[in-house]
Length: 119
Image 1: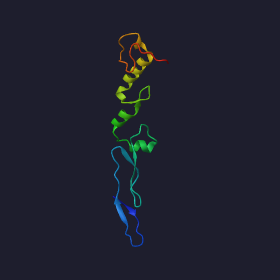
Image 2: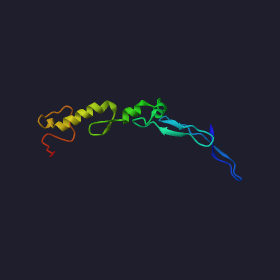
Image 3: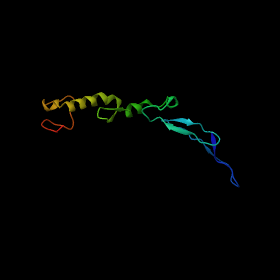
Image 4: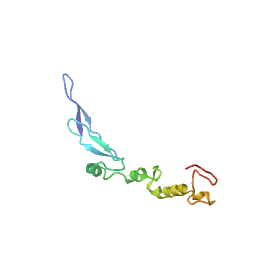
């Protein structure tokens, strides 16, 4: 469709533009009508702001939320399938058990046997 982008005035004719089409990660917030273009809102959020937002984003790709909406115990963004592993690494790191035994499972990054930090 089209909408009136500029109304006529003086010697100027009315100018119409093509309505914007919302993308894959967007939904239509305001419909294109006579005097206004389509307004799109993003579905790239972790929590819906209201029922209309949830309904509008119903067909949005789920992969985006699985990749961007989960955090480990340190507050780092991680993919959903890695949250438990990263939390286990954090628990192992915080426990300092790896200081006593030569091998820590899972492997601890950032600290080695013999390192010491004042907590």
